[in-house]
Length: 446
Image (cartoon, rainbow, N blue to C red; front, side, top):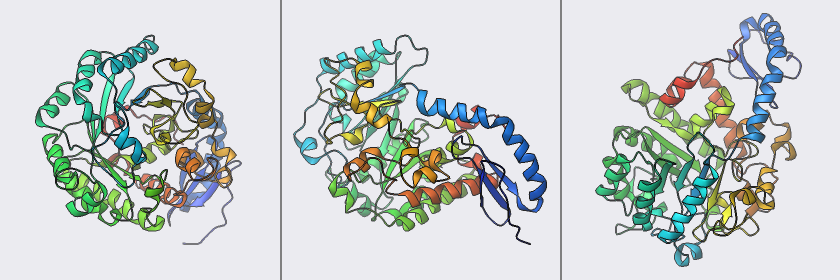
């Protein structure tokens, strides 16, 4: 093939995607196009004309999503305490061991206040019971779910150490989403990272729970990438596919707390094995006809092909913390995101005495909403800045400066580039949720 020196249309940046395809992107409005290199000159003229017609609409839609998206989810930590001792936990050990739990009356007052705040909205908001280990107070959680299931969609994130078959039956009956923590298909590796329980870790409990939930649409498995488990990610995907798990979220370890920094993996190695896990999921899906997706990668693909439809709000700038969601701690503090637990200066008020609108307009929430990639050196010239979003502000604040590029910047770049190549091959349908695919339609196509 003869290499040509390619000139990008005005306001579009170009880079080679692979031997066959050239990528054109405008980072500010989210517009992109993949052009076959063999017909480059003809396609460039068409692209230039088409881009001129849609660029303003693209910018308006992306800016509306970035700066006008409304509060739609609230994380509630009904207890500070945890029955595990994961070495990378973002909740400080002192809080996990000596913190408080909400009473039934307190949780009732919180949910009542949230329901009143959302009463004028047609769409039901999401309530997720989260860190540390919410099933330590499962009795009051289940009562709350029964009472408020007509007003909220509920989810629970758990290490499964306390999960019983009767709990699973309840969760299925009420359509509650469930996230189960599992870091490896190998018991020894998993239990080194997910420490706790009679067996020294949560492996047996988590695997039993996954079996109980076999085929359940509301099940997600949550995996944290560290230097100890990244090489085993493809094996984990195969294991979960056999268990009929439909979605696994594989996320980089957050370095908010000092202990977690000792587990930081090599970035290139993390990208290598993460993408091998994505490939494994793709192959399992195509071969069996039964889909398993890597949810964090799926969100990257969605961030490219349908930017305003993405579900995980960590990879947009400003991030979803203090904007689309926030966290209520067991003591009632309203903070932009659970990652800010243990960090000073990020309380937007207390739910037991303050209103939700007051929290949303607090200086703590505004500080997180005011972190834009355009203000960050390196990010402000990056082609992928509104696909990646430079996460995570809490992690970066803990490391000295919220307004710096992401710790795993190169990892995110490699994942985004791989996503573009997969889209060029027409394989995006294999890595997206079925319900998401049904709701997608072409807005622009040249």
